[in-house]
Length: 192
Image (tube, rainbow, N blue to C red):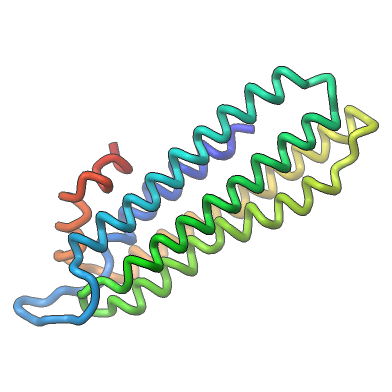
């Protein structure tokens, strides 16, 4: 399953555009979290999530390779990988929520929309976990087909999540958040 790396790339690229959302006019003060603090927290949460999913994916690949003849073990490892993805996604959303709305125009809307989009990744992993639990383990071909269908479904859903990011980043424009995300070390790690 190479989908976790595709998701990481998709969310990292799309989230940087979203992080630059909101309008911070000249001299106007908005309530909320300082944009520099907000960017560091949000990018840190996304980076932690991406690194965790990437690590989990590598571990999953090794474990499956070592147990490829044991269909039940493959299924158990897949379910564990997806559960970790769901937990990591939930933690990411909680960290982003804890950042609070950025102190820019439309900051509360940006925060709400960002949390909603990130929550879609959590839902994707949760749904995939439930589907994986139902995969057959007595027939290698049936398991293979189920894995392929599940992988395609996860990829479609995560692509849709990325498209939602794109729409959010197009909806908002903020020089202040753009500056904050371009300077925050955690955000630089996401784009580099």
